[in-house]
Image (cartoon, rainbow, N blue to C red; front, side, top):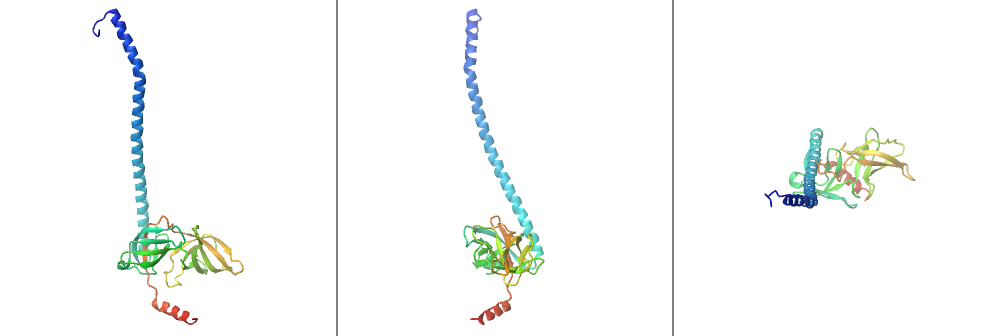
Length: 253
């Protein structure tokens, strides 16, 4: 039947080819649809791989920028710096804390400041041979003697409270004019922190009711949630100053 060319068989062959073409058309559409699904699945996998690669490249770029800033900071400060990485964070309440991968055998001691290229992060409160616990400025117990650049405004900076990123500077007289955008830094008067470590910038001021002082609200330079690398400032307080303070307190006991 395939090779004969009789008129009847020719008609049968044409009808068969026509019927098969009608049957093949929906099947071909199914094949095209399945091929499109497979192609979309492959493209989706490639898209995920590329997005992951882009995220890792961005992370590496940000880490390199932070390390460059830290190296520049190391060259400008007078005090010795101990490089450290933050290996644990707790920023969920009022007693927040960090853990760093440097400790007593690296020269870290209780009371030393933790900083990065942007400014102050916190203070060492506990140490072990290989690690140290940090009290960040977002902690209800944190206090630092501070100074506003370009003025005679001195006060104590603390955290304004849970749920807020702002710091507040107290004990500044209302007679001292403080401008928005002014930089707040450590004063060095407390014998705990070295002077001139940036803390943040002034965003607003409010007079304290019933007092002749004002509260100065500060936006910190450091983002605690994004901080990963830092330096411990090898700053040892003057023992004579501490002894004088203890003697002074003893006069009133």
